[in-house]
Length: 372
Image 1 (cartoon, rainbow, N blue to C red):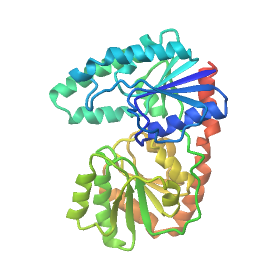
Image 2 (image 1 turned 180 degrees about the vertical axis):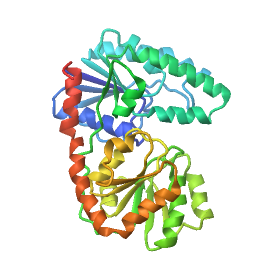
Image 3 (image 1 turned 90 degrees about the vertical axis):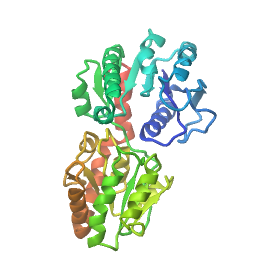
Image 4 (image 1 turned 135 degrees about the horizontal axis):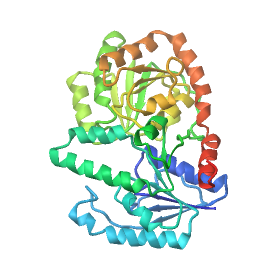
């Protein structure tokens, strides 16, 4: 069996990149399949997540300029990308081609890989598209509506379109749609660390991730429990704005905007509560890591990922979407109830077992073998 994965890049930290690396490694090391990663914009940078020595990597080096794929400068590079990917597929002769990108190539893959089984993976919620639509200008709205029409047409030509949750699957109503969740990283295991009075959150500093809402909630939390700290780890376009927000609220001594870290297990193991303030989140893999480390979660009840992972009142609590006051109330509840925290921590480690790598990868293998 030959497996080929197509993605823009693997040099930036992100959930889609991480699970792609983990699946590639599992295909190669556990199933023994010949496995290849094809990127278009690696630009000579190292892959940020470990890849098995059995996984081959080819970068097409298309050389897109920063910004929209549909800028005039980048459109001129489409033929090069199309031809290079087609040559790679015809040379490798895969039994399955997986695509993990929101780029233009998803419109072309059914024609590039004609005759091969092709699978498209959704790592973004349709609510995220809607959020961008609502914030856009009239021209952006027209463009996104046209893009959605084209996507709906093209996706029907894939062998299967894979969604991370049943709600996402039901929204798109594709006859070739299937549901396969992500799995947790077996390398990320709890370490023996003393607990600190801290709430932790890890993720991209963007509007979607809602850290401005978490900081607003923390203003209330800190006033009542000044001995606790909020530790946020990540990078992103909103870092400067968040730093200003923290300074304006005089919270710099209790809200720490840390850079992204590779010491995730250590940081989770020493934390009492995990906070997920996302406005939209399709399948936040960091919640799997939090549960694996026995850290109870407080999350906005945003569409659609948290509900696909957490069991309310067992391993997590839900706050009203985009409601900082309710988020603060739920965090305060766990702070004030250590026995409840310990019970939820134990349940978290039990509940996360359904996302074991071997369980989820068996579904992927059944899919490519036509036995799903």
